[in-house]
Length: 531
Image (cartoon, rainbow, N blue to C red; front, side, top):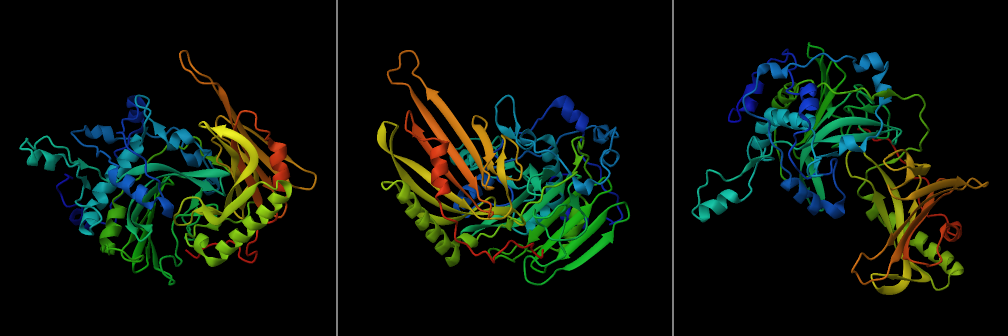
């Protein structure tokens, strides 16, 4: 197929019985040639916090991807058989996952130190652009079937009387990135490549089209709620999500080892394909469920495009069966409205006011204010977030920062129960524990006889003048101490100071021990969504 062909028309004529086409992906070539991805900025998948909508939307607009092209030897498409398949190594892939691997998700170009997309992601993005490009263009989501990004160079050349043959408008296609999704709150991880398109609606982002290719491990083809709260996770849901009504759900055997599932919600479509090698594809198309501009698409054409996506082979050598899972309290599914509710605002304000009174009993000259409720985490369907209260204040100790002397500033956080365990994750270990340790910090954890547990993260950095510089050496300190209460909530204090200010973990422990319990609706508990 050429880029000027009509993919939609071609796929509508394809027979459903057609076997999955071969992928352009050749793992041996990737190893030999290295990652040859182009530089790009990485957009956050799964949505964005409402406070950063404009920034994320701009980032998405500026992100570009190159489509593989040129003449190729057909033999390059041939994939050698894997020496060991995941079925041979793992008896039950649904109850298996991968260790968290920062380097896998954030591939760094050794020449530029920029984060780039691996070749596998490039290939999937190109395949998806071929399959869905015409539909996306017809619906007004893309400008054209290859998603051309106007750099402005052509207009400038034309206006200045320069030749326009060499101007650079880029065919960006579908931007696809590696994604690691926590299994059972981070005790293992699912791997996939995901991409999509979104648009601003009010103060939020509406995902108009999303596509994800899942690696084997950690998910089940059995329909059920699409949420990180469950393990294994469901590939597709047959329950209500976009509206209060359940979708028209169909399952069909394509006849070549693949299974096709379609959820018709009327105003949106969810489609999933399960492949013989244990990989999966899922996509969603929002026609007009969430307001904004309608993006109509023919369901049969969308289904044909999904069926045209090839089966991919991935390196599953690190896929490991999960032996025992720690029991984690059910987490809160993303709800962008909670922090703006009257109840949340009242509870956060009352909690921080009570904490301020307790702090003033210890340090009369201290202050604490700005109580607010916040949802911590990434917005998106089925993603787990943490509910918290925040307050900011000062302690009656002087410190000098950037030549300004004043009281020590600190932040107090309360964490409500749900979706986490007491403890601290070590650097690059994205486990189920609430606290986390940075690369250069010293982190410790301990437990008191009464069941209260603690986690501390401390970092000290000394700066000294170089030869010829005229300033005095100084030492920066940061310390965060988290207290995990036996009743299931937690509180933390983060503080930063310079040089010899008399602050340490014991002092912060005294403050946290005096803090009252947070106010919250104990009858409101996290629930598994219907879809």
